[in-house]
Length: 351
Image (cartoon, rainbow, N blue to C red; front, side, top):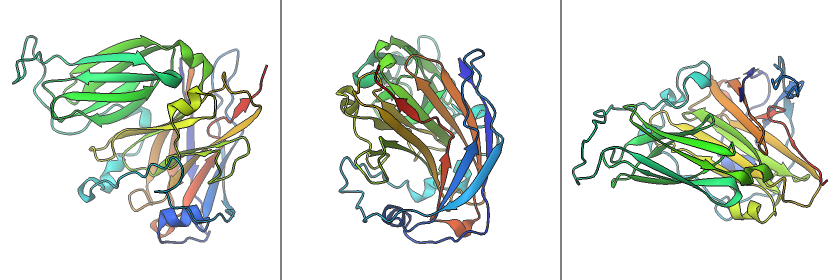
C-alpha cells in the first residue's frame, strides 16, 4: 500500500548567511541552520491507512551547539563520498520542478537498440538481462544483474517505490545490496530503452527492522540523519553518510545503519539514503530522532527541490510523502535547512 501526501517547504529570508567550506563549517557547528518545522506530524489513521496532509510550515533560525572539529576522513565508520566530475555537476541535473513521484525511475541518456528475442551479445550470450535476488543480513537483499547487451549503461533499480540509478560494468554485470521495504520483495532493473529484468525474494526478517528513507533526483544536497537515544551531532549515536555503520551492526542489535543508493555521476540520477534500525532485536527503550537536512549549494540555491520520504515499520505498509523544498537564494550557500517532523521518530519500547 502506497500512501501519499504533499508538503511544500518555503525558505524564509532575513537570517544571517555564511559562505566558506561547507563541510568544515557544518562539523564545527559554525554554519547557520534553518529549521523547517511541520505541524502537525503526519500520523497514520489505523482505520483508513491514510497519512494526514500537513499544511502549516514554519522556518525558524536555530543556533547550533559548538562541537569540536571532526575530520570526516578519520571519523569512526566514515565514508567520504567522491565529488562528481565537473561536467556532471550542472544545475540541470536537479530536473524540472514538480512532483518527484512522476519523475522517479526515469533514466536520461542515449537510447540503445531494443532487445530482440534470441539476439546474442558479441560474446555469444543471450541479450536478455537477468536479475537474481537473495536475502542477506538485516533484511538487506543482494541483487546480481547480468546484461550482456547493455555494457557500461545506466540502469534504474526499483523496489516498492524506492529507486536508484547505477552503472552496469564493462562486462555487463552489476551487484548491489538494497534494503527491502516489503516482506515479499520485488525488484526491477530497467534500462533507458525500457529493457528490464525482475526478481522476487521473501524477506521475513524485515519484521524485526524499521526503515526510513529519503530519495531525490539529481544534485539536491539532501541528507538523512538519525540521532539514537538522545545522541547529538557527532556523538556515537549520530548515524549519517559520514558515519553510516554496517548491516552487521544492526544484525547484532547494537544500533542502526545507513545505506546510500545511486551514482551521482549519472545523468539526472535517482538517489536515496535509507536508515535501518533493529527495533525487534535491540534491548533498549528510547527514541530515535529522524531528520532530513538540505545543504544549500550552487546547484540547488534559488531553486525548487523535489523529494520523497518513505517509511515502513516492520512488515507494515510503506508510507510515501512527496516533498517540495523552495531553497534560499544563492547568498545562503553553505547553510543547511533542517526539516523536522517530516519523518516520524522511532519509539523503541520493550514488551
